[in-house]
Length: 352
Image (cartoon, rainbow, N blue to C red; front, top):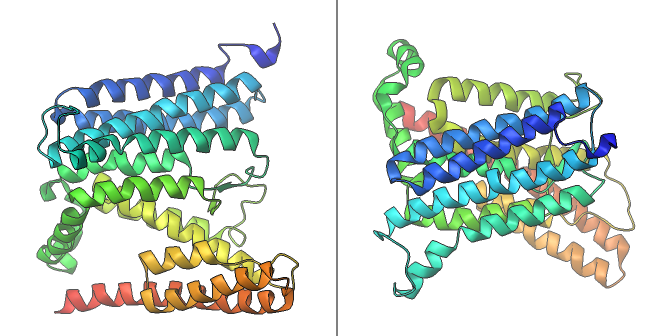
């Protein structure tokens, strides 16, 4: 048999384990709501196998077409359908609905059907990934497993217990009052368990998967610290945050991944800033920093980004390049100022 068409190669076995874990996640999610944390755990296990199959395929030089398509089909189940079912169950609880019916109020029907958007976005994203040869060392759009991990972490937020944060409590007994951290965590729990947060997140993460926003990957030909400083900084920060806060902090880590990716893309664009026939608009980046970080500067960035598009369409390439630089500077300024204000806010709350 052709090596490209073999079923049970070592990488394909890991891929099938990904599929099994995703299927078990769906089964647990359809049971009573108390099993959502089990369902979420199986999505994390599926993510581990999804990472491992590619690593094993490259390590054993056994990359195959069958494995490539099998991986995407498994991912639709584990990272498209499984998290959608989890969100569906959480929305049922939030809207106080015992079972789906078309006799429900229209707004409840639309809300309960909204997780299907995650499945559609995952299918489109994975199909494009298979056909797109540009995504070898980075991603264009939020990776489907990252989106799935975000939604899979939400049941752990719902069942959060501060007494489980043993490492954090031990450290805080020496350094600062535990009540402060509990207050900050309380705000986060309120936001992450809010009904509207679920609904908005569905559409935001679906859009992030489909937009061609560069997202960094740890696959690289150069693993030097200098070339990957931002990536390693994120990794260290994520490990420390997880060590202190465990699964509860995963949604914030995912948001940080998106922001780090935008920051790395902005930094790379500034390094290569020159006169171009097709200048960068900065529109997506400026919208993201406006939403997540600092509104006033972000709005200025969006306005200049729209000017880039306008001048480019009118054929005025010189002006388009000029406003591309301006939009880039305001986007970068919004990113840095937003981070500084966020950090200052934490300090002020701590000292108040």
